[in-house]
Length: 462
Image (tube, rainbow, N blue to C red; front, top):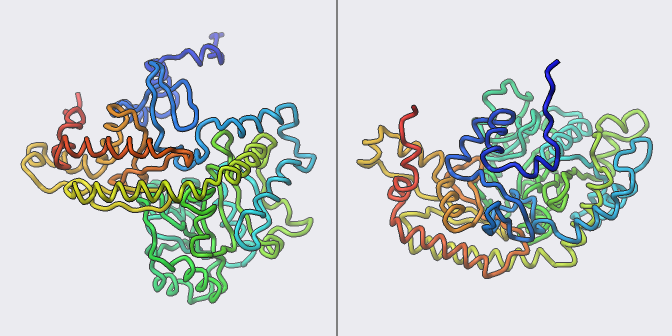
C-alpha cells in the first residue's frame, strides 16, 4: 500500500514561495496561482501586525486592502486576539446547549444596530448571511420574488449569486434561483416599477456598491427605497457586510441616511479579522413569522455559526470599534484621502476618470485606452489587457515597487480600491498618495503605463 505523505504544521510553516506555488497549482487553484504569479502577487508573508505585513525576506508592506473590509481593526489586534485566547479552554462547538457568547454577542449587536433590529442568526461568511436573509424574507412574507441591483455583489453561493449583478459569475451556473430580477442601482423609479405588483418578498441592496466599483448612490436613494418597500409590503435587506463596523464613517452605512432595514447582513470585520463570522439580523416580528415556535425554529441552522471562539472575536471587535471611536477616524481619514485623490485626478486626468467613496471605502476608476498604434501592433491585446487587468497592473506596481498592498474591485477591474484598516495614520495616507503621483509622473498616460508594465503578459503562449 502506497504510503501517504502528510505535511505537518511545523513543516508547512517552513514552506518557501516556490513550494507554496507548486502545491497551490496542484491541489488548490492553478489558474489563480498563475495569475498571481504573473503579477508577482504570490509573495510569502510571514508576519502581520496593525497596518503592516512582512514577507519572508523581511520587507515591510503597508496593507491598503484590509481583507476586502475584513480588517477594519488591523491585523492581529491584541484585544481581539486576547478575547479568542481567553475562551480557548471552553467548548467551541456544543450543539446540545445554548451558546453563552453567541447570546452575549447577539445582545451587543442589537445595541449598535439601527432601529429595532434585535434577532440575530450567526453563520460563517457574508454569502451565508445573504442566503439566510433571502430565506428569512421568503418564509416570513410567503412571497417568491427578489429584486436586486445591477452591479451588486452579495456572494457566490447559489442564492447569493442569484442576486449578484455580474453575468460573468452567473452564466456558468444557470439556471440560478428563479424569480430574481435586477434593477439599476440608485434608480428609485425602476425599483418602484418592480414592486408595484405587491408580490416581491425582498429588495436587497448595498448602501455603497463595493465590488461594483465603489459606487455611492445619490443622496436619498436608500431612504426612498425604504419608503417604497414599506409602501408595497416588501422587506428591505441591506447588505452591510463590507460597509459595516465603521468602514464608511458611521457604524453602519445605512445610518448615513437614517435608514432602518427589515433585515441587515453583517460579516467580514464582525470577526475582528481573526475568525470567520457573519450574521443576519431582523426584528422580532419578522423572525417569528419565519422561524417562530417549536416546529420552525430549526428550519435554518449552521454547524459552526456562533461558535465560542468566533463569538469571542465578535465581542472583542465591537468593543474595539466603540473604544477607539473608529467611525470618526474613518470619516476624518477618508475625507483626507478623498481630497488627495481628487487633487491627483485634477493633475493627471489622462489617468484618473473618477474618484468616489465614503469614509475609508474609496475607489479610483482609470480611463480606458484609446485605440492606438500599440493596440494595433498587439492585435487588440493591449486594450483587452487594460479592460481586464488595468487596476491589477497598478496594484502590482504599488505592491512590487512601493510595498503597498491593494487590489481591483471584482465587478469592475478598471477600479482600484483603497480599503485600509481604520487604524491607519495620516503618514500612511500620504505614502499612498505620493506613490500614485510618482506612477502618474513616470508614465504620463494610461497606455504608456500598460505597455511598460505588461509586456510579459503580451508574449505569445509557448
